[in-house]
Amino acid sequence: MFRKLITFLLPWSLRRRALNKWFGFEISPTAHIGLAWIFPTRLVMKDNARIDHFTVAVNLDRIDMEKDAYIGRSNWITGFSKDADSAHFRHQAATRRPELWLGESASVNKNHHLDCTNRLEIGKFSTIAGYNSQFLTHSINVEENRQDSTPIRIGDYTFVGTNVVVLGGSRLPDHSVLGAKSLLNKAFEEPWMLYAGVPAKALQPVPKTAKYFSRTEGFVI
Image (cartoon, rainbow, N blue to C red):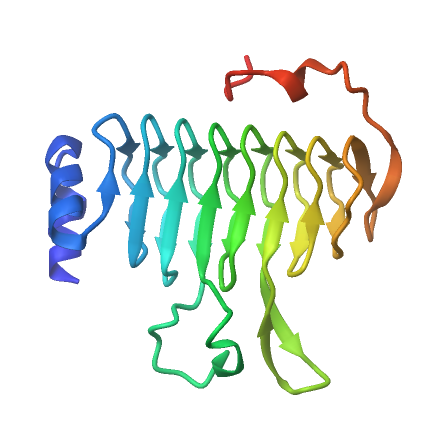
């Protein structure tokens, strides 16, 4: 803990080197972490990947951020490490992956909760927009009376609206939109679709001519 605190207080040019040397991280010289407490077991940040101020990431085994990926301000990213000395999730010891993966130019905006007890994938050029969304890869299995976890996959070139809830086992297909305040609780397969509601269902196709789905830069102005 002392080494983490010392590292946290260093200016970024020194902090990046300390994180790579002392913690075995792989942070590109062009990547950047603001005033944020980011201590998964392993961290890989490729060129121009960024994490903004006041975000916390703890108790998960790995975070991978591809080129130009972005995590905004005041996000809470947590999980349940496979190294934890606990009876929780022992029945999933061979399959559970407490990880967060962001594809190229993927973006997570402000004040979201990302539970990475199992793998959470956010595909390339996708946006977790707005505020106060929850991605929950674990829950209590009431039939078996134990904690269970299931991965979540958010596809490439997707748009996730504000204040949604996404449960373990869910999948948002590529080139899709999840409407604001929706509950995604299953794996959908059909791309180019607007999903919305509680629970979410396919409502209507999204136009394949929409420029959001063919952009070559992640940041939308």
